[in-house]
Length: 43
Length: 511
Image (cartoon, rainbow over all chains, first blue to last red):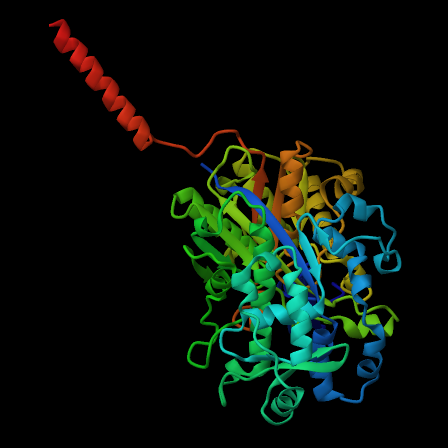
């Protein structure tokens, strides 16, 4: 079973790293539930 | 014929008091925690003008040293100053006092008031400026000074935004409307400073330029300020207001806004306009952002560093018809992040880097230098944002490995050979790809490199209209050597007709 299966996840992405929507896809594919996702720009 | 990069200019303006009074990190802190430790400590972390001039990344930005020279300076760079001058080959680092003179010059609605003694000193300073001092039309816009009592009253009782030098009130910007918040004194100040710093960069661009001021037909402003009123917020055309001050009497203008990706979109647009024959000479320019001054100041103060985000950036690029010499922008190999590209880093890098290169039959490793998000790591690393250019170069290198162009173990060499240290201030659109364009032009013309790729990215999600972000790229390459003189000139037509008539006459005589 995946580490994220059945877990609620808050995803904070970085535009110049891994953006929020990309993290969402991974979490969903791993059976996790995204409760909040955002991408931030730190520059 | 492809358009060329004819000339490039970069400027910085030191603005420590604007940082304290106008940067959003500080203005929001004054609202939520007016007695905070940060606000109390910040004044002790402001840099002197000399520190800013001798700061290696700033010097690299204005061309006083190369990215390669910067690589040789030990980090953190703020602890290892270089001995340099205010002016360098791409522009200058202007002191804050003269920025105030420039906003007075750029003010067309008598909204800027400077204290009379301060104003008189500025007039003398501007007269000795090597570019502005030669322009009576610009110097003539400097207004007469005002009594400090009047300025104090406007700031205290009438919603004016104070202008400070060494923490002392020396002027103000009045609000331009009683109710409209789009014309508030703070917004007017932000817009005037964006305009003034764009003007400064364009003046450097046109100084000693082969192309005359009245030959410029179009200017595109790609900064991040929204100019307008309550009925057309962001109505724009800051570009034409810059053209007016600089003296582009034959030019029109318009703005392109796309967050930090706007400069790249604007340069692609300008190159396309010139290639299409719409205009012969297009200037792309941007001034800087007051809001972003001291953006990471809390982390810098917490780590007992100087508040490094104390300069307002600007740049200007002249895109011209092909002269057979200057580096070309290759319209046939533009990269863009489409709506359907997705946000996975691999997909983003493919869209911006490998897809356009495939159109040229080139590999990633065929590009000598990449310039993507050139934020200064001295600023970003202590704030936890990492080394942004390095992260982007690693992503490009990783894609080259995935495509079988090189081994994974080659990535460190790839970063050194095809990347460079970040040297631009964290002014949003300013670091986004364009800071290397001046060096790219020089290095291509010197034969040191053949081509470079400029990449800009924009955080569209910050405007809350979409979750998407954006990106665009273009390749700058050595000129193919051909010129843009396509077709036959009027003189050549006359000569051909005369020759035909002569032949015809000879034929008649022979008969």
